Length: 358
Image (cartoon, rainbow, N blue to C red; front, side):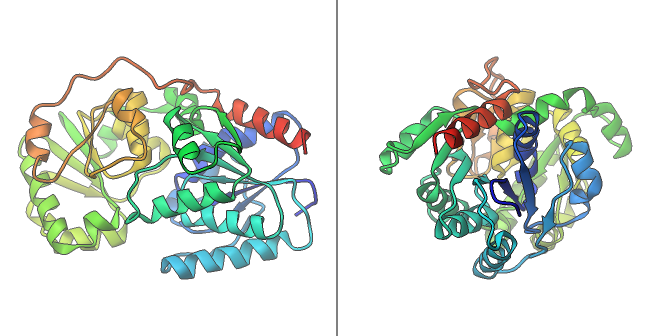
């Protein structure tokens, strides 16, 4: 690392589409940058082609921390980032979202007296049983520059005593990436590739509350099975989730097609062509809002309420899923404010302005 660099910390799949527009906008402004990939997630979907798809520079450093318990992973990321920074003094560390890499980087930066910017600050589910909620709250407390995707995030930050921090409403940089690649999303091509015929739905499940508790997983699998009697379900699964859901009886349902995780273009193409989506993912709630695909979120809460008020999302319980699928709400013809494809430029401008005053 060089003193004066803006250092971006990424590590999990959702971080990269958020970071790409910011890095591009700062590069266009001539800002010296470095990209550290913690390696929190690694699979073929995060191969070199993934960075090429997103027009992201290859990371300057991959810490390769891999999986592990929350404590093990967070500690390994902290040690790796501290070592990478060494005696240099970056101008700022930029963190994204709510994963362990996010809070680990913010902790290291704060301890070393380095400024922190948090992209996607202020989102709250108000559910401290979610590891991501803990990460969000801690990261915001440690951040100097809070970059928010939706207006209610500012209310959340003010409620937590952060109203005197630098808060900029910038919009959603992940949506920048989606809109930039909109012409590449080909639902017919991915349907042909997966041998899909007719209507289909997409399901994504990864939260421990849904896949790790066997009885809950059985209930979810049963509900998905009932839904699949009317509409085939395509279910991309990572190995851990696949093992859990197979134990819960997933293999009994012929109309649930389990596939390997897809790359970014293929996955969004699949979602774009779906009749509806069932998910527990925060990012998918946002992507379906822009793609105008009905989204049913299998959670009791969401840190992204704007996807309900200004989008296609609705929260559902497992017991209510079949009925809610049969009575899908009309898709709203609205878009959340500043989800317009230029959030990355606003984030870059906010960072440059903020650093110019330091």
